[in-house]
Length: 221
Image: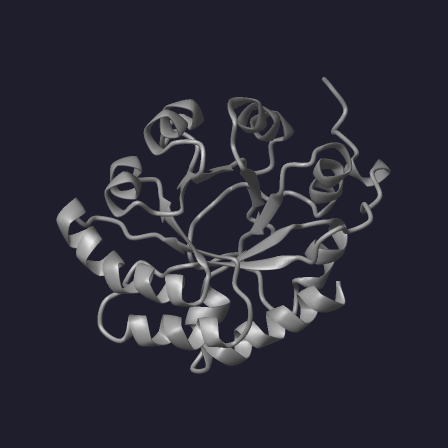
């Protein structure tokens, strides 16, 4: 049996750009959520917002997305659609995030064109990440690094996978899974280009304050 890969031999690379925040929506985005999104984005720079809803038909999803996409445009935050290529095309979204088994990067690129951002969930797999890069992904996402109430996952990479990736590849990497202001520092130090965050922000009564805390951590890192 092969020995486990030792990510620790790859020290965190020198940063050329600060780590940035990548917000992921809760599953329920109606009601007062547009106001909460606006509040969160006012708390500090947010590079991207992923629209992630389940069990809605495309017409309903498009209706829910419209005000959120407009708010993101106001704050110069990229609007990324989760999993649904047809919806991303319909909304002329800034990009699409694909989970494993949710679509092919090359197909998505052919439909969306060269200017759109395409990211891929790679769990704890170096192989999946390299494969996504070879197919033309714009970023790869590793996780879950911590327990998450947003999505069940049996994958638990060590922060060293971020250092390994950042040391060898120019493609940005995203850390995801249960990330809070209290546990984000090791992921930033390891080389994450983006922190994908959901529960820590939307579970707070003051999302702007939580975003500000992340922004301060990223600036320090």
